Image (cartoon, rainbow, N blue to C red):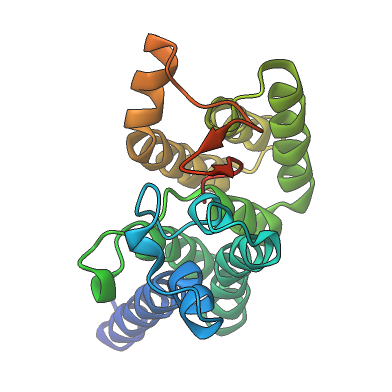
Length: 214
């Protein structure tokens, strides 16, 4: 039989990890940074996305870099805090919900970013060598094809396999799920890649160069 006291503590820990992860993940750094610096509502520019690519379309590379960093580190912070408070199970749960918070922030009508930066931030907290591998794969594919979206898709597809090969099966399961979400959020990019209409890195879209869609 389940011990009701331990079961109650477990439910509280799960709720705490979910809430912590989602609240941190749903912080819309792209929107906040552009508004605080007088750039207006980033959702009215380019693709309307709140990630680093759309911030870059304002022509302000520094703000795009800050957005990418914020979107990554909120995932890292969610995992590290949850691990400290509730152990590895809490860290995995917080990681999942920080990613979902970034994709579907309640404050913005559940319309968030595409998840690449937060994916990297979660990898950094859970298995930093795999985060480095992700970035290396991204750079290699980007160099070969000049497609940012394809680089992220390939790197995210390989990352769970690397985790599995390292023996971190729980993290591999989590990142397999996150990869499915990331591919879902890039479905329009995938369609353009198939049709040959996807923008390449360095090409102009709405007056500014493209880069990482976070």
